[in-house]
Length: 115
Image 1: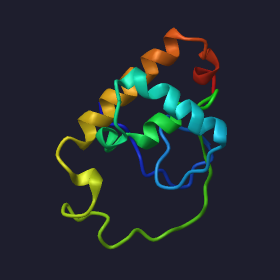
Image 2: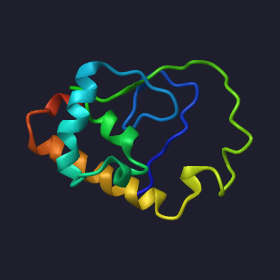
Image 3: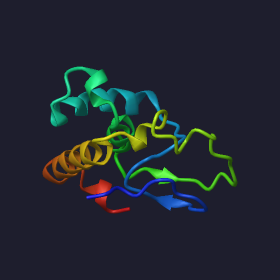
Image 4: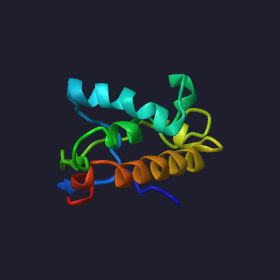
């Protein structure tokens, strides 16, 4: 599974937040409640998945807003700098996403799938 990211010109629900996001105190609390679901005991081990966990921290799917044009950093595609270019990036994110999606389906969060 490869998670699509880097949305542009989109106003609507997405599965995973990417780049810039805003959240509430309750989202942060829920973020920490969800860490055991993915067996994360140390935030450093989360490495590439913080935005995915935060994406599942709401009562509904996250929402993307079209903020207009932006410039990517010149090093955003540099394998020596860009995290998304590191080995294991996509598999770790896919595993986190699958575990959280299954958890949401099995718990009292059916509204997350309604949007």
